[in-house]
Image (cartoon, rainbow, N blue to C red):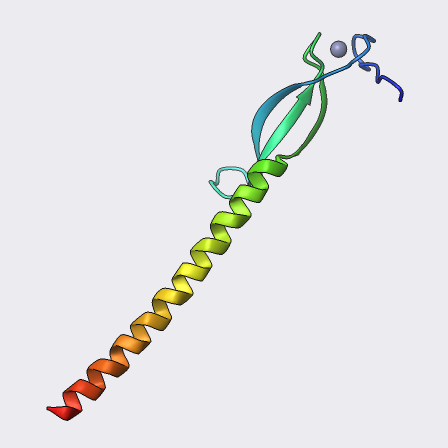
Amino acid sequence: MLTPECPACKKLIQNVTLQETRIGPLLSDEGYRGLIYQCPFCAHVLGVGMDPISLKHDIVIQTADEVLSRIGSTLQQIANSLNQLLSRRG
Ligand SMILES: [Zn+2]
């Protein structure tokens, strides 16, 4: 396996420094958490990408929110139907 060389300082890179960032529309809270990969010697930016762990977390939370919302709607419909039945029985 080749050890990459920093294009700025030319030192061999065996690990990188990570910085958190947001990837998405400017001036908005929307978007995804991202990572900036930097040279550990000179902080040259080697790349930017989405944070896979945060992305997984966000997907799980969004899915759980959607499922809970649908369950809530279904329970509300059941409650409305029961109330209608009970009101008919007087
Ligand atoms: Zn460097």
